[in-house]
Image (tube, rainbow over all chains, first blue to last red):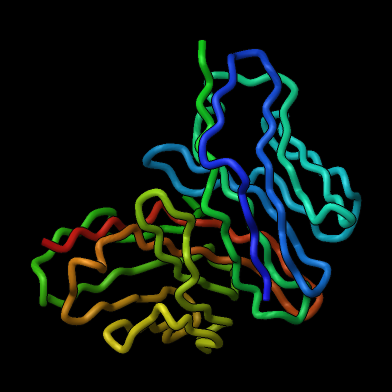
Length: 115
Length: 116
């Protein structure tokens, strides 16, 4: 069985300071991992994905995440927060090729950016 | 617009009524998913289609729920005899995939259902 745990339900940072959103996964196989962002009244948007290539993945809007197998983690980071980053962020795991392809979402982390 | 389209965006219905939602995926995508998202939670998987075949259904999908994708293009999700607990955002997503591919899913903006 696969699952993801987002360790913080809410994170607050000041504009211009680093962002760290934590995600740990559980998987019997080498998974594919994603981060999605959801702005109010907007659809889910893919930030970045890991599919067993480079362990450091760069995404849109300056976000990146590092896959650490030894720690079963896929934390999302950004060097400098912007007001527009305020949103809900979801870590997602999906089985590797040949699986059922369904996405398993974490419970989300709401990021607040303070001026 | 070539994204995933869902209709209606909002639906208010009385308890006991039937509702149907429609999803139009990105045209070349062969995989289609339905998810349900309640307030403060991440989306939960409901069902998945590969072309017109429904390959997996979650235990969340009670017998009051049915989904179809008759020609492998658009899909409908019907809820019969709605209950207040069905109130949620229903999300549709699509992706392109085959045996050698497992690409990201693109999500629609969802249909928000309120059962009163």
